[in-house]
Length: 299
Image (cartoon, rainbow, N blue to C red; front, side, top):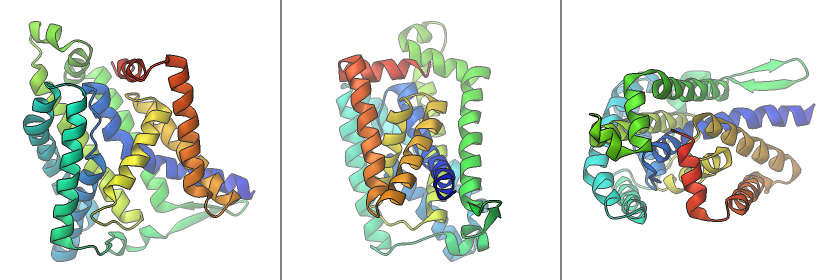
């Protein structure tokens, strides 16, 4: 029964990883851009929620109503000022640009907030540690279950947006062939800006749940990026439902690894990621084809 409990905890943890990776997968699937500042932007959202909760006594869930639109605006500005310009210079330049942005964000947050760790757990009542005990001594935490449910709803919502709305059709058209889409009246520039804004909205939600389930500090963004990237690669870059399965695989691997050895939590997750990455590279033979293959899956 202990192994079943570990698997359940791993699945719930995978929901968090899928939530964290959602925006990264969406942006890569639409624009082919790997946003290295993804984790740092999630931390920015966490700090915005912390300020609202600490200084204005705003419940974090209510604070999301303000922070999500703010992060959408940040995404729009990010695309117009950084991503759009750097993408014209080649595939590597956006990676370097967002890497530089991550450094600026991390050090700016350190300068303003200091190195102390913060958390939103004190502002959400008992949700942080409440749980249900099911038959067989199976423990299900309320916050992890909520996180998993939000990840499923968010990924499902993005899937419906892409498949069944006019905006989704424009995004898919610009993803497949932006030049041809432009000829039939699709403003690819506006579509990419909107897609980045949508991606940043998901980042805001991911940052909120990171801050509620654990602590955060100005430099935790790199760690969040690694987990998000691993979930995306395991599930298939650009595949929204694949991101959910990738997060679950990563979470279960870490949970079982922790049961086997005290230091096995991170080692098991990284090992699974490397095995799947090598397998994908071996099948596709080259890295460029690997990323092009999974970008087409979002179309």
